[in-house]
Image 1 (cartoon, rainbow over the protein chains, first blue to last red):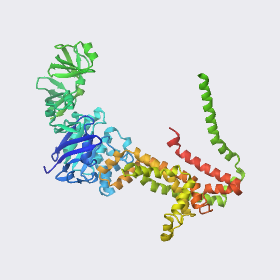
Image 2: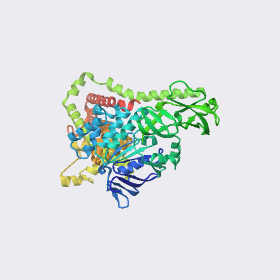
Image 3: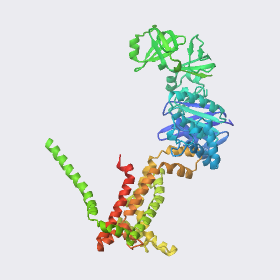
Image 4: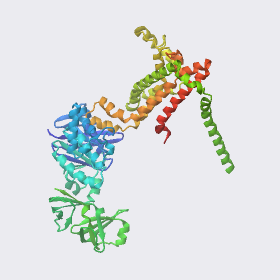
Length: 352
Length: 262
């Protein structure tokens, strides 16, 4: 492969060994997902040159950045790779403008030109008016934007994002996710999005690399990965309700005849994700706010200790997660008739 | 049981009071016995001015020297895996517990006219350090250095090294990382180190008098002037002591946010 990122890395840190491979064609984005401690951050550090490779190589657009066999290791300061670090790691003693200008200045751009470029980038990511603020004064979303601007300021050929949504509240997360998708699409180089939450990858990329305990356990599209889980992490993930359908005007028509009303659903073919926790069950038709209410029958009940997963057949069929106490209160049993309710705001919809 | 506990409480209170008195009584004595009527005259006198100027000059030079040498030492000890760095750490903090007089003797043996380095300095460069102002600075630097090393080392260990990683990924060379990221992030430690070094250098007596002697205007700093004055003009000694006490108080107030209030 000539263009893009091609990495096969083995990194040893303490007793932990990461052995991962990753191929991202030029202009595309790969999501690296996995539970905490899977080695995702180690992978980012290895790609950025902050961790030496025990074995393997990192190539970007045909240039060898690291090759353990040949003893090649290009330092992080010389790699055309922008990194948005976990916890952002903005320099607390510098203003946002100086944070973003830091990279260009360190790479030899005159201070005035670096600041001009930084100001333009800050405006571009939507925090132009915060240029003189210190990172400590920013909200989580603003700080994330500054961190992205800082990484883009060095005009990298590849962009690594380590848990960019982790420190954000739910609402900011949602808007950041769609914005990140747009930004990565317009960014010409290749991107690597690292996240512990597979949902973050939806709408951004369909190329998923699942990492667990320092090993790549699965690669493929979100649907492929979810269809045949090969790790407890993905199996857990399949626990989410994943549906496909066609959306129009905030209404998603599902193949089984079901209809879901979802806040801000884009028109067209969509993927729908509903967390089982967001699915409420009732014996009587509930009144109140839920926009999505339908009838179903209990198809299975899985007691998982502190929670119970109830599969409800219907249109659509969904899995609900309730507490054992709630299960008793509802006195649910196999074949029982229940009302299913999901708030429109709890349904995540992504354009296919 | 109760009796024993109350005995213990009384014992602790008595000892604590004795400890407080040990500090307070001498200070009170200094203030009570101070010849306040002549204090203004003594403070304004030429001799005091000379000693004060010399003290400020040498202590500030020693502070600068201790930081210039101490920060790299601390960096090597906290950031590298150099073999022998633990031994180096022990050696560089030794002057902290070494009697200053011994330090002075050691300095003489190293930098004296017949010393390990002193002979060479004298022969090839014509530099003689003992009994010079530069010698006083060297002695003060010697005793102040451990404070710089220890405080900066702690600061470096406490600093978020991931910020340095971020700087490197942005293209910063090691020098840029150090000056634009590391130094700003240990600024509080640097300030504390500077203050401690300065206080230690200002009060330095033993190593200075041994290595540099007590020549007015050349090596006789304030503490040495106090000692010299005790012989022939005790009142002047008290006034000079008050001056040093005042300076110490200023340092204490400057540092109170850092160490005294937790």
